[in-house]
Image 1: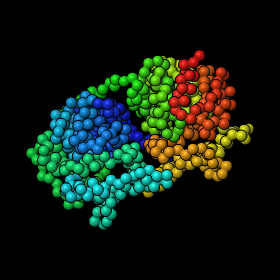
Image 2: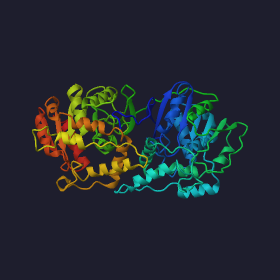
Image 3: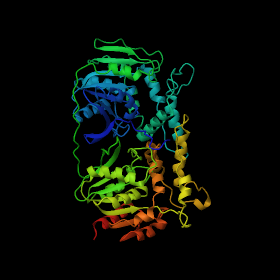
Image 4: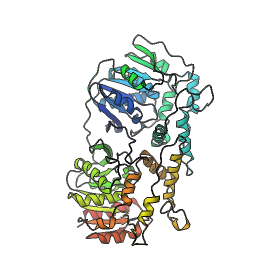
Length: 569
């Protein structure tokens, strides 16, 4: 992929809000009357980004991640379709949306229909695009066969199965019954679209099918008989969720039926359908942080770039935490909770990792570019003095930030990279690492790139460096648990297109030279099984007043060590 490639929807801002202890995520763009878009289960809001951008000229567009999808918390459960409709109505209330134009596609149309039936005061009009119109016998069959289990396995076969499931849905109707009669007469989804869908399934985890099963338990045709707001039923010949021969109900007094066949201008034609009733403007909420509770938000760092932040509010000087590449700050959550007992904690997804955008431009980037983006976010998240923690790539970003930002008081570096430039045969050669460490994973039609990424990450747990798969490269360390590895891989898959950008900057970073420029109290630490531990004591010696410690195996012990350093003299 090209340097700085975008996988997140451009032109849309990203936000979190909370209602009833449940956090939900949404995209927003445009101005004017409010149009709310609901994607199909289990896809995320990004799947409707093209439609949102087409509507932005005349509407304030809000695209919701439905509960359990994308970045929204699940409802627990098993939830009913009514539970999803109630949750959407609560979300609208939390956003200050009294009444809106509502659009849903596929099973998202089924949720939109239930919102219109049970919360008509919230809906000016509703567009139901490719509403699943299944007979009772079909719903029973689909409920049994449509949603297979994708239990993680070390050989990565669940990754191949997820890709197969996503791709087959653009080929056959239903996907599990391939034949000439069930073939869909349309282009199959592009590899990039399939990658996003597979990643959405990975994000949702074992509960990816909750919304689908809730939809299959209800008859959309019967709900159509109860709707009493203006509505438009949009059908299409390539509808992958409505079987051949399904009966299209005759429109009621307040309804229309429009067929939109697959065509390049379909999004534009949908634009002409949405927005026929009264409207209200959007009043975004001001989140009220609750001490001790972890919440997420996005920070605009300029140039159309957004960084995701995880925060635990509290009293005192904040601790800012930066994670290792290529994962995200989600992996820091257990440590965040341990160290947050005496201070507020902020953890960022590093630029180009997790749910954060890469720096502007096309690269190649330097660690200073990533530090500048983080610094822009901290101007809002931690405007006063703060302490700083970074691990591996995050440690290098933290170093550069501590050198340039006078508001940093104390610095913790966990796992510091030291490489050979031709004068240190005891270190890994920098040139070799730059040549071999960072394969690119361009989406392929058959999903083999995702399987390759799975085994690439698996090799990190068994060899150092991962590409030296010989006896000399074996890592004699305890094996990571499969569930933990799966969680980490999901974070990598989110930004598989840009995961390599901070890595490459880290491999090129002149660590030894920059350590000498640190002027704040610094603790360098590493776990005994960390391959970077061997030279951590040396790195600490390069920092004026630097200190070195081996980390305990347990998180509580590590947190106690960090607390002693941050609060001691």
